[in-house]
Length: 124
Image 1 (cartoon, rainbow, N blue to C red):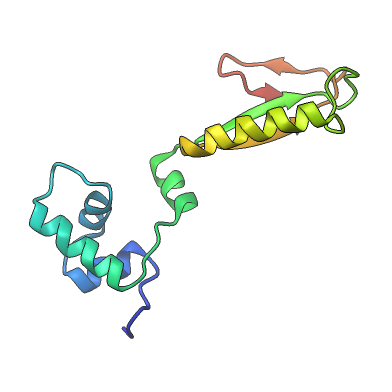
Image 2: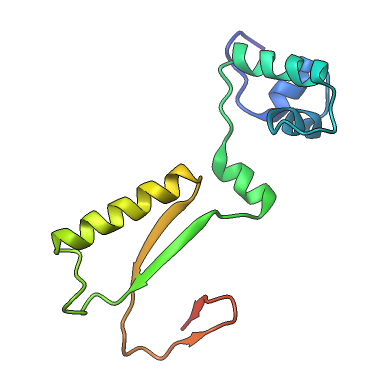
């Protein structure tokens, strides 16, 4: 493997001589690993300019870390053309980003027949 070519935790694991789960635990600062092992993995990751692939991690952990803001586009008092609304959503989005969440904005038809499940997911 050429220098600066590690793209996945599998690449880091191969270079460190450890398993993929050890790399994942080391990069997550798991207490299950020794500081020596964590430092070895972190040094290799740093040397390889490795960046954690957040979408891949979210799929593995089954966490989307996404908050949905659902509105209907025809509401007169709440419009994306309104500058106050844009400022409000920008602040909410920034606050969520600081906590590692994404904001998903969805406009729905308020007259569509929808059922809201216990998980607050809209099923149409």
